[in-house]
Image 1: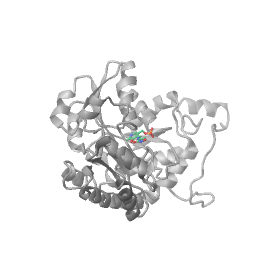
Image 2: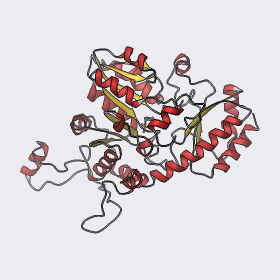
Image 3: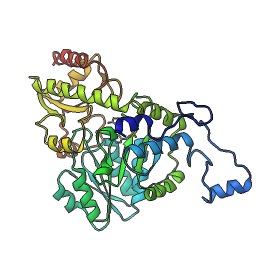
Image 4: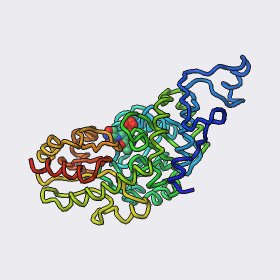
Length: 388
Ligand code: LCS
């Protein structure tokens, strides 16, 4: 089956009893036991079944299985947010005394979690450019349990060679986790390239409509069981209703990603011709350093892009304050085009030096290209550019 068809049908069937095409929402906190022994057997994991929604829920399970299927792996656990997914992942793979290598260009919230929270738990994190395989190799120690990377990276759209990172992880008995939020499995499937674990902020393209927060981790059955054992005690489960909204949003992922990608390509080309623009960051441009690699490991380039204006930060502010159709907001992957300033917003957890080191300039503007008519988005940017 093609990925488009898996996105529609994968893991889902009309309800056996009623024929309902849309899956029911099991909006319940708890599940009745048949008798006391049944309850005890479920708690003892001698029999499978539902106990309490923090542990598992049929609506969430359906979505977790579907994401695992789309990512060509076995199973998954869902969380209340993408960041909760990252936290649970790391504390499952690493304990006090262990080491994690993370890419230096990642979502600012993940960066803060790695920089400030993990060391408090005795887990040290080294930040490195994982696109530089020699640098990555040098950062790995005998305590390294996890390599964590995003590709395309938030917000610079840096492309990381997943297969090369996977080979290095294997050689060093560490696990490779790829945050696949920007690409989605429609455009890129890290497990097929050798990654062990895939993480998603479902808040973005999976939900697709800007109305939920959620996270997912998928991987091998054994790893996911271990993750679940921790997750149920930590308690950051997704709500059944949010899982259902993601199930609904996911159905249109393929058509949305096609449209996001096509419009982003056209906008990136428009921006790169613009006299007020210094540089455009979009892997679909042949000038992007990761263009060839992106062509190899992705089927299209996605809907995210960034750009520097010649007038730097002040020009960026004028632009963001002048847009009328685009919305000045963080988050991404929504129906609406969103514009934001990473250095003062999503990546304000980075110091100026850290921003410089990973190439996020003071004036960098990030655009999450939505599903409006592309010419209307360009017209809006054009009228805003006139104010600079
Ligand atoms: N991973 C990536 C690549 C992200 O972009 C985000 C959030 C997360 C994980 C965390 O997921 P959450 O907890 O928000 O569901 N990125 C955001 C951004 O760029 N703007 O606002 C949130």
